[in-house]
Image 1 (spheres, rainbow, N blue to C red):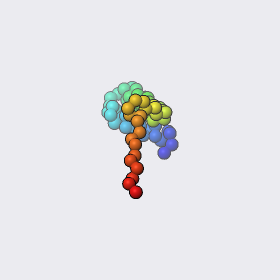
Image 2 (tube, helix red, strand yellow):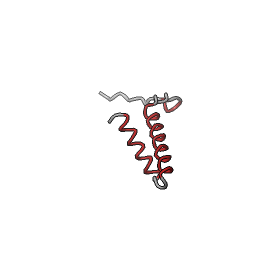
Image 3 (cartoon, rainbow, N blue to C red):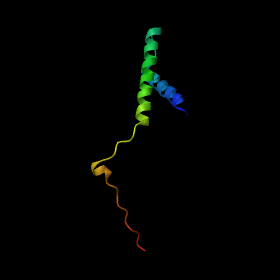
Length: 67
C-alpha cells in the first residue's frame, strides 16, 4: 500500500468517527478535517521512535543454561 492509499484509508476511518452529515459546506469542511487527521497519523507513523530512557531501557539478562 502506498502513502496516498494509506492517507485515504486513514481519512476514511476519521470520517467514520466524525459521521459526515449535513450541508455540502459542512461535509466539505469535515472531509478536509479528515485529511488533516490522516496527515497527522502519517506523520506519527513515520516519526522516529523516541529513545527509551530510565528503567524501561534496561534489557533483561538471560541466564546461562546449565550444561
